[in-house]
Length: 382
Image 1: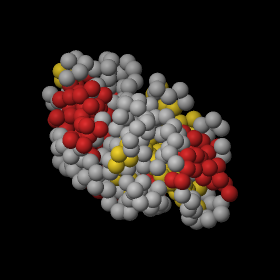
Image 2: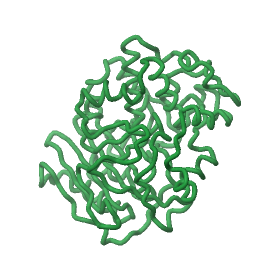
Image 3: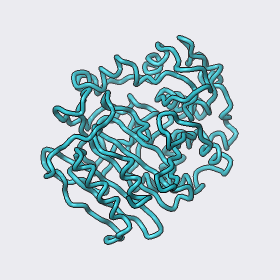
Image 4: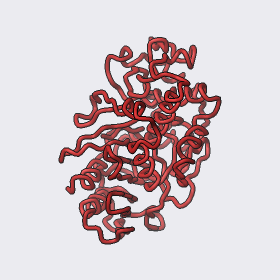
């Protein structure tokens, strides 16, 4: 289920790059685990389909295993690293939802609170009404609030070549982004349907800030990153670079998936704010989702709320909880996690309900590659 900030204006389709880009797979402990053969083939297939490079880590009862394929730098041919840090896009949403649920567990707010209580006067205009929207509806995308990244002008400015290279370092405030959303009518009345909206998590991040008096990033660091020792994970704010070790990130920046490929590594990620700002690596994401589903971050009641799902119309085999996707694979296995995309970076992180079998990976391109095929390979062996 590709629930993520789109970095092109069309659905991703396979594009052939030179097969010479496919570098050797690199395996970590256990080095010869045949149980991951299908995953390795799926990663190599993604590179053959046009993804510049892939980095992946899985963890199960046999230990941790990592593999890479392709390149991290198209100019130099340098391979990707199993330790690569990358922009995780909408995987940020799970972190934000976790903090909001922790605040509920502490009695500092309720998911049934109206948005207006925490952000008075913010969700208004063109039919939007914060008095009718609950915090729960923000987290499960049933609020109806318009998705600001779907605004045509925003798309031309930040997702297409001419606009991107002129504006990629813009410093837009949350108020600026909300103004874009409020200039449109809502998609539907709150609670009557489902539609993925990055504005929901921009608002959720602002609620965290109002409830705690700290930035949402500071709360994620204090409550999740530091306790789990996620050394590669950060909320970068307006920092435009990705910390090393890392690879370059690539995009077509066009309405088609052909044509030139552009290096889009540096940008201001605060344009995504609580909907997609964060940076991590595969090992940290595996550790985070294992801890979350294993009950280390939330009390049982809040974890149950997080796993209470609604139908996601865009994906027949998936349902959406509170910042968490429940995906049913072809072999009947359920995995929980999230997908994420931002310019030049497409990521997925999933785990079984008991947290014992987990997977996280990244494509350093946003126009090709089949994330679902990699997940199916790891958990279903095909």
